[in-house]
Image 1: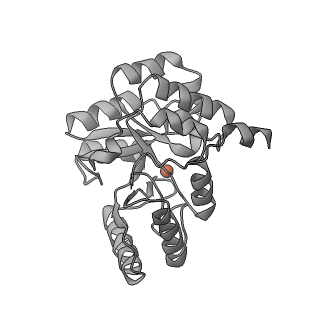
Image 2: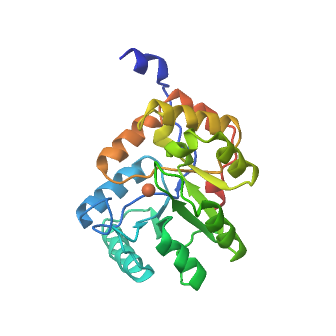
Image 3: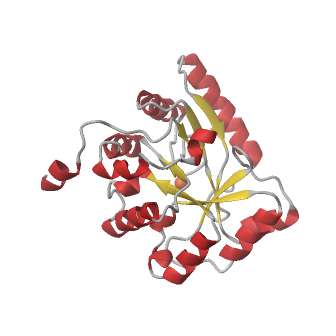
Length: 242
Ligand SMILES: [Fe+2]
């Protein structure tokens, strides 16, 4: 209760009307599971002020074998449903690629990868173990003309423990995407602390909701009232260029 008294601000602050990270295509990852749930969450997000949602289903070889075809066909289903509802919000799809051998292979083979905006490609890694291929994947993606976007760097435990690596990634100007829920302390205190540290270091380029379901959407609405949102007021985010 005390925490809420001191951390809440009256006005809600949405840093951009474009979101670049969410799981809103039904039944293909751990995000929304039905078309109804999808429409409900998208409706809720549009009431918060979002005009464009670039949704990013997981692509993870061991769990979610999503191909561009699967993602595009689900996107069409959702587009139709939100059109029927008369929603104004625009929806596009890319992907959130999990850094594993399969992803590396796809890059090497030159297979189609889903991007957004100006060839941005969103990727994530294990939360605990430093991926051996991290620098190699970033290098290969960049050499192939992609602009890799590192999803929620504040959430990786191996980065909390390895300042040297974190500094290297920042120095290399790897594009970082912050989850807004991290600023509110939704995941944990250390994640919140890291989120603030990255913002203060000017290392954040994109923000995202990483919304998986209605529970996340409601938490997200509350997060927009958190005092830490003030750190985003003066930052020029790439979201607004999309
Ligand atoms: Fe995600």
